[in-house]
Amino acid sequence: MLKQIEGSKAMAEGIALCRPEVICAYPITPQTHIVEGLGDLVKDGSLTNCEFINVESEFAALSVAIGASAAGARAYTATASQGLLFMMEAVYNAAGLGLPIVMTLGNRAIGAPINIWNDHSDAMAVRDAGWLQLFAETNQEAVDLHIQAFRIAEELSMPVMVNVDGFILTHAVERVDIPDQDNVDAFLPSYEPVQVLDPDEPASIGAMVGPEAFTEVKYLAHYKQTQALRLITKVAGEYRTRFGRDSGGLVRTYRTQDAETIVVAMGSVCGTIKDTIDEMRDEGYPIGLVTIVSYRPFPSAALRNALAGAKDIVVVEKAISVGMGGPLAIDVDEALRNLPHAPQLHSAVAGLGGRPILKASLHRLFREAVVQPWEGTQFLDLNVRVVGREIHRSAKTRRSGPTAEALLRQLAAEERDSAEKGRL
Amino acid sequence: MFEVRVHGRGGQGVVTAAEMLSVAAFQEGRHAQAFPSFGSERTGAPVVAFCRIADREIRLREPVTEPDCLIVQDPTLFKVVDVFAGLKPKGFLIVNSHKSFAELEIEEVARRLPPGHAVTVPASDIAKRHVGRPLPNAALLGAFAALTELVRFDSVRHAIEEAFPGRIGAVNIAAAEEAHVHVVATEHAAGVGDHAATL
Image (cartoon, rainbow over all chains, first blue to last red; front, side, top):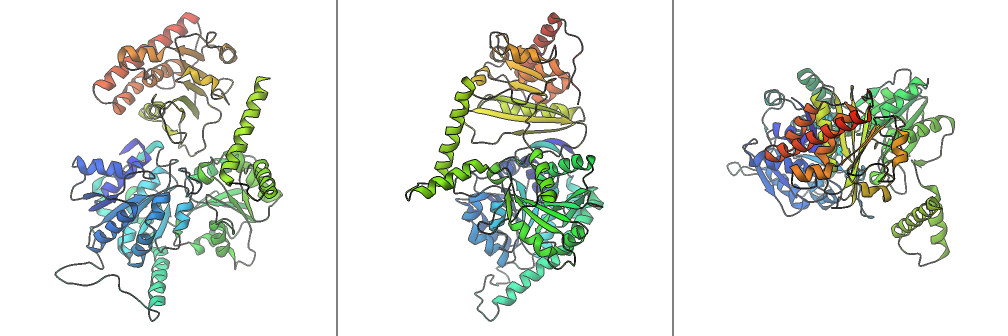
């Protein structure tokens, strides 16, 4: 059913269609309306056979989901940002134990400095934990990915994280087609656990494993993720057949045929990039986009196929591995490494801590990659003047004080100056 | 594509206004996207929300920097925020005030726009009469429908009903209706001809 609906509410409705049996949540910032919406659906009786548990922290939220999943229940939770970090130990445990929990990450930055806005820092902080990580481009895809996520998670017995851009998607009201219950039921069979804590057949989950088998356990987790590459494609195909929509999969291409420059990105920024590409195509630039939907497992082969013919690749990402550069660019580089005529890779970090990624800036960036390529990582729309002044200022004195406060003072002073100029 | 930027203060229903407008456009089979300018929302702090309306899928996720229409819910913002930034030369302007543009000292901005593209509406006063509180958002949507003719009043009515079922919705619809009539009458008195917005 077509609805004009807030992203979080749409996701709540989509998740409810998956008939979760346990939902645990810690309902304060950085939480979204998703669990609030699910709480409403449990309370008003639309979502039956589901226990909604308000827990005392994010650590407890995922720990309860782990317990529920180990006891054979379909378990769901959601978090973001510092909340994800607070549950970090449980994030690794859920994956290490192979429990098919689905968790939404309403992607946001991680402090310090304190920042509640969108970027992908939180997702990157857990990229090595062993969860599958899928990224939604639109709220429609966010709904669809959750339905696919339960299917993938349970078939593999691995946890899946659905990444949706905090605020940009979670708080946007737009058109979403909410699937009907019968179709979701047919697509997603009831949960058949591969391991379960059952008093009638006592077993333990979570053994201590020494050097004799730790490598093998890890290898099997990695092996499962490589198997997931095929499963993710298959599930997206079945989803298309049943629901008539292209959602999910490993990567999606947009106007890449004959493209000499190809942009690689994840999440909602792909929409703005597509509009930019259309405008550049109208001007005669051969440019296209590859959207990465599955970040873990990383679709190296699919990506290599999609990028092989291009001359220049521009990776635009909302995260920074401090001291190294863009983490997605590093992964894309790995996919291209052994190509005989590998395209040139240009890495750009954009949209950190909620800075809007503007079409005008992308126009500049994509042109610059071809005519005036930069070294290392470019920070899109970096305020070079402020950064330069701060480097100079802090070098002058030992006790230069905290950086964040100094930058804010500088910006406030600039604003005062320009206001005064306006009055003159 | 038609892009709207709503300015107001926390507590005035700025975000809800953009959302209801998107629902009204959706009612008419159009694509619409509403989103707030994200921040820690506090009562009284300047707030901005956006709404895009188009006949095809809206992929763009940047904030609206060059609006086709500005809705200003609080005229005290003119001194605090650069409200008019980027307003298109053929854009529309709706200001919540019982004063004229001249009295608000923004006559120059209004005059630069085509005839029939700018209007002040006493939306807070209207809301106080119907809703009992000075919440101008629904009334301003009624004014938007009258000024731009981009959505039908009936769609606005439906969007308000969806957001506020029952009595609250009914009184807000009454406020929207009065603001709608007010704008139609103002336009008629000014003798401006056809000025409907297009996508």
